[in-house]
Length: 328
Image (cartoon, rainbow, N blue to C red; front, side, top):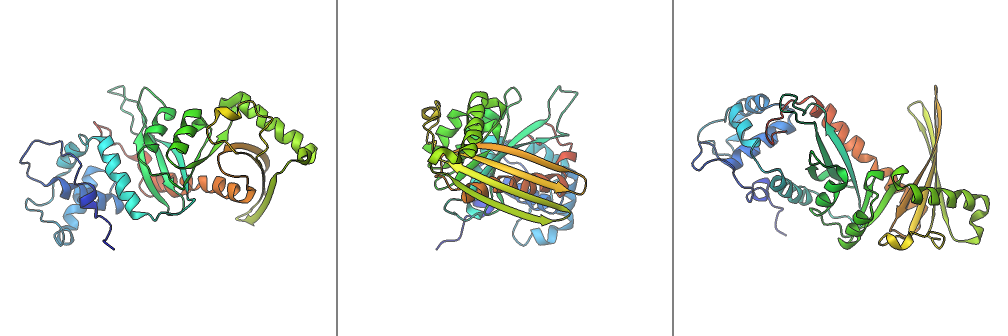
């Protein structure tokens, strides 16, 4: 079998925004920046310092005819690269690094780059929406939310970058929209969408269903239940997941493309100082199976630990003051 495309090849279609005949090769600057950021550089000065300290190693696979570019050169390049084109190349590269897994969970969530705001230019902080491959623990794609819009409009654009066949897309209540559910089904995937107050009527109806069903043992209708407990690090947790495909009671069932199942997660958590209870509700296009639905919901939160935490703690994203043009 042929080897996966290299980073060079995936980004070869990315347009160089500079004038012709620049001193430094576009693809080599991309490679240096990627390597530097992986190794902890969090500024253009840091990227230049990495390049100079590792120049001998970089020359084993780069030509570097004009040496290592300066930090100003990196700054001017990256603030002009088209982010939509970059996102498409990045998505193809990420897909090449990850293995296709039938039924894999793809959490979608947003994150704010807290210090990317620019008061002088009246520019708000950048908000990113990302898709995460829970099985492979890689970012599949990321897009910036338009400054005059919100995550709801960015999610469909993000999903169009992905091959969703055989995947289960999980989104918090922000993404519980009929159009998003329809798009996921059209792209060959399934969805599990969280319900909260933004879907007031539907949320209340699902909440009431489970209240009545638990009081009457679901009135003889089919349902599934799964319980899991764990203890460690000074806390105890217990989750009970209920799922049912009994939707005859739901007036809006035909408004949601592919809707098959409603889910309730009843969770209890106790630490030395606090005890808490919470009920969460979801709608889904997957068949009613409490264990698999609960696992997918649990995996959704992997994007917080696997991506958001890493970006903030390891890569110090929230401390980064790069904010000119598209640099951030």
